[in-house]
Length: 228
Image (cartoon, rainbow, N blue to C red; front, side):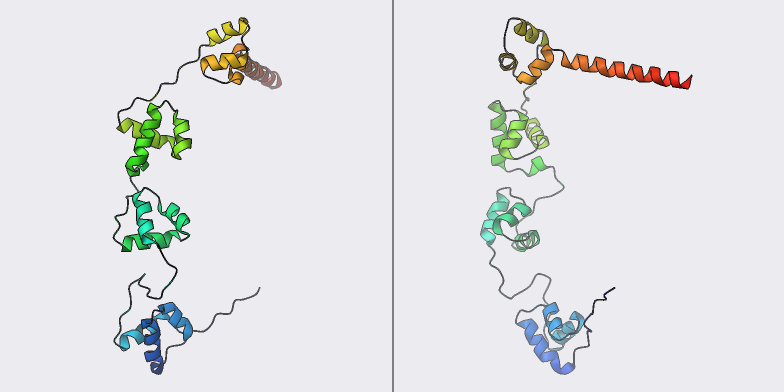
C-alpha cells in the first residue's frame, strides 16, 4: 500500500518574522504564508503579533479575488431567491453568497419558518390569482414552480376555498356510452380522460377486484388442502 508523504512542518525562525508578517499584511492568508515557510499557521500568528500586527477575523481577506455583484445578490435575495439559486445565477458558491450577504447586513430569512411564510408578495398574489382563474393545484405548482403544500397554505391563509373535486357520474357515463357516445366525448363531458371513461363503462375496477378476491380464495383453499 502506497503511503502518502507529508511535508514536515518546522518552527518559523525569528529572522523570518518580519517578512512573514509583511506577506500576511499584504493580503495573504495564514495558510498561504505557512505553506511558503513550510510551517504552521500558529507560527505565522506569532510572527504577525510579534511585529505589532493583528490577525484578521475569518472572511477578512484583502487580496482582490473574483468580482462579486453584491447589489444584484441583494436584489435577488429580496425578490425571494434562495442562496442556492443566487449562487447559480452569479456563478459563485453558496458559502460565498451567504457570507457576503451577511457581511453587508442583509437580514437573512428564518430557514425554520414554513415555506409559505417566506414567499414574496408577488408570488403569493400569483398563486391566489391562478386559483381564482380556475387552475388546479397541480397546474399552479407547474406554472409557478412551487409545492402543493405551499399553495394550500397560501390559499388557507387568504381565506380562499379551494375548488372541490367533483365526483364523476358513473351511471351517466354508462348511459352516454349506450347512446353511442365515444369515450373521448364521455371524458370531455365529465372532465376526465377517455381511458378512465373506458374503465368505468367496462367496470374494469370491479372485475379487477373480483379477480383478486378469487385468487385469494383459491390460495386459501390450496393452503387448507396442503395442511390437511
